[in-house]
Length: 543
Image (cartoon, rainbow, N blue to C red; front, side, top):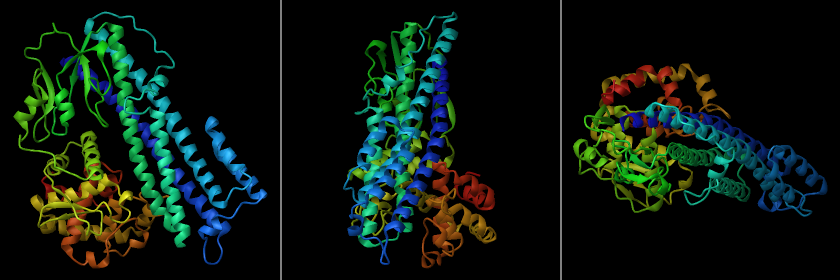
């Protein structure tokens, strides 16, 4: 099994690399769509606004024939590459009595359809085909190496991946789930636009709102792509098994502290290839699943053979090949460690997604391990009086939440949980605000911010690289004591930053979240604030 474990890990890493490379391009498409949406809304506003702003009643006025003609031209221009998805919007655009609000809705729909049809669905299909082919050919090659002779494998049918993507292994097929994401996003955006018109809010104030909604959908896209690609890779592997005459396969869970109970229970189980069912006895078993399976040959000797694992500190080790996840957990993990009980369905889902992100990060340093341990032992408590969505109560040692807080649905819950868990880690273990080197490094980093004002403005300007990076934004807010808040996406008040301990705690929580979640802004922190980053690592004993 050791041979196949190494080969399958290599195959799945190659597949994940392809997915991540594609998602980097998709992120750019999402950001471009966000900018197009903002331009469209602002153009709409200034075209129809009167002195007191655009009212909802004004938006409900019907378009003239000339305006309908202009709309049709706009729709055709935006939609020219979409093909079959063009008809619905064109049908909307030629309504004789269309209102201005409906026209705006049609424009938003056109932009989102271009994003989801061209940049998302079509390109994802091409990417999945590459992943399937590469995995299938790797199985072919690895089988030849294992058996010592060349085996004749069938060629891949051109429509294989297309048919796989139609299979509803996770409750619905890929296209259905993708377009549900699009429709939900459009509904959210139109709700915000309606609120703008009713309350007389200037369109510039919608930028952050739009950004948060787009950010949430980017995460949904990543989750869908990761899960779907895992399905495609698993199907490709099993196609190879069938061609090679493999009769049985064995589930291989990852032996580390991030492994969930579902995967742990499946580890080591043996099934017939002919009876494989995705999600039941064949990976993936859930979103962000890291399980693989390998061919099972009962006559292959296992005595003295080893498989890869990680100990309680995250160090790479080898354990006996026949050691199951249950055996490993008993040996290397605290058996009393249990995931927190969370009654609220929204928070439960958010927690599961957050731990899934942790489980799939390539970062294996002590910061990640701390995050895992302190997440697993956290206590979550509903507090309807809480004015924000999340907060860590140091005295009670609970992470409080209020799902009814304003704009709760706009929060990046993965970041919020990483941030609040980092506060818990800091308070119970490190006390960053008392660390002399960390405090000195903060002073130096503050001077650096003031010496690089133009760069900071560039980061958070319209279309800037970190325009909506909440963590980096709050770091700059702390280092400038709110002086640059007008340029930032997020930040605390001058009063809050007047307490040095608050600055230390928030900087630790933000840097730690960026480190664990592997945000792009980590590169900027290392380059612009090297002393602060090194001091942060010293606080945690990671330097």
